[in-house]
Image (cartoon, rainbow, N blue to C red; front, side, top):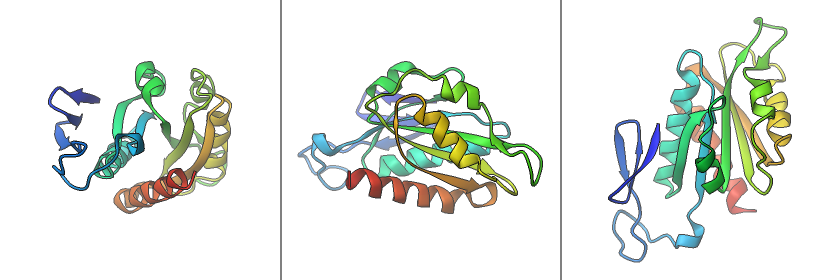
Amino acid sequence: SCAAHPHGASVVGARVTPRTHVGTGHHGPRVPESRAMKAALLVESLTGNTWQAAEMIADKLQQERWTITGLSRVRTPNLASVEQADVVLVGTWTHGLFVVGQAPFALGNIANLPTMRGKKAACFLTFALNAGKSIDKLSTAVGQTGADVVGGLEIKRNYLPQHTDLFVERLLGVVENA
């Protein structure tokens, strides 16, 4: 889980990543406070792959000077982290048969999340063999919360580092051009 460290760092799992000290030049380039984005991650994971992808995404965003307001399960969302976030990232896994009937897990829970009107959202979905149209179904469900869904990406479980890099790269491109 994610929490704010009292000494200006964000904690993801046991790893501490320093935050930029605005105007001091510590820990990398100066980032104006107004440009620092905040993200909450809501995740469902069966085998740990989706949770691992979420942690990788959170880590990569922190390297881009984003603040992670929370990492929680879709079924038990950290509502304060969602409220504080500019962007909500929703991730789940694909269930179904190998070639038919694929769907994002916890779709009903996702569609019934508290309203996220005025928030940007992006979706990610882990899969083993074939995700079918699951990312479209996931994006639709997240959109039903009132969020502005800016995109989604299927992440093959064998390629978590590469596909989470791509997800963050695309997310940054969409958010920076908004």
